[in-house]
Image (cartoon, rainbow, N blue to C red; front, side):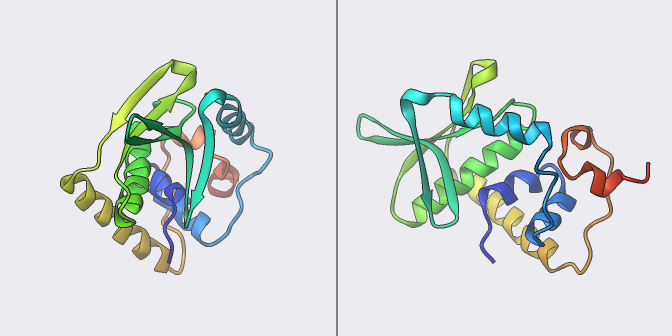
Length: 165
């Protein structure tokens, strides 16, 4: 199973959502939070806009800083920064396996904030553990039980999990 950056991002927020995505259960495509995220991604950092797809990863921004390749991931807010860090680490790890050294940066245009993310052996071990857990979740016959968390208010799957409440 190919694990995408989106799987990694959601794994650290809601493992039920990871299961729903892997099993091709579509979220509410009319959800305004999805629209806001798409708008920010399309209209931020337009001077450096170079989205690129490599295998199963989709990098929002890529540029050269001297001889250093810099990849960027654009997020609506830093509320789920740990998830964003591991998503970017997944991209850095994938590039490293291809022999490409890069530096990563998380970009939060609405907050005018940027964070540098570096690939380390320790981070790689955590990433590999998360990927193993995602494969385990994918093999589950039914999704994990829903857990009410603050993210649920903004989730495009909220009606799937909480329609009866």
